[in-house]
Length: 327
Image (cartoon, rainbow, N blue to C red):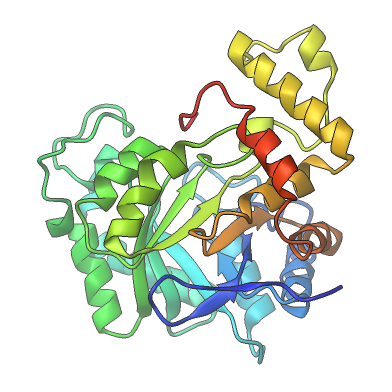
């Protein structure tokens, strides 16, 4: 294989591989498969690893920590240069989202599992949730956010800044799945990084529309993840066009029809087509992808090393989407 491109990590002075490994499914097959995947990623030049206390296939609603434990074992003692990002979040009780002590305790547990005294990046997991921000949350954690709320003065932001001042992390950031809500929070907090999941791929543009202008103005690192979610699978399903699944609206069916046509004409896999499409966006520092076996991360790296798509193919994807939103 060749060499993975390195991009500036915002204005931090760091550089990271344009392809990062997300830890959501590291133990999909087995613990040791996950360890082998992380080590293979390092060998191939991947230098950004993102995890969370919630991540781990088969985890309970509030997580098992398996992903962090896998990363901890795989990265311990390695001499390569890399950045590790983890998160706080997914507490069992709503009140703990606004408890400084609960958040500090979770950070302690994160570091224990990761076998580290500090991480490079500490982030809020799902900052689009109401539970982080108010003592009187709506029943649903995803309720609309109050634009007048003092997000930067919240307990979780106080603890993140405290952790950074104490050297337990170097950078702090926010993450979310809803691009519109994430943009609202990002405009209200002072952070170093922003991770937007499920909002930017071959069929979605919400991250680019909602978040990137705010991130650009604030000078924060822009990271994207969940880049295959809108496809519902990495395989082509022509039967979905003749017998659409319940989730497929008429506009979405037209989008899939166009995407499958482009894929058939160019001959690239949906994985390669998606990743190389995103690599054209220079505002993105790293694209997080999921892998749980060495062969899977090898496929992603091989695609990334080819660089962005030819302009004609890139433009064909740009023309596909009816709904430019985040979902």
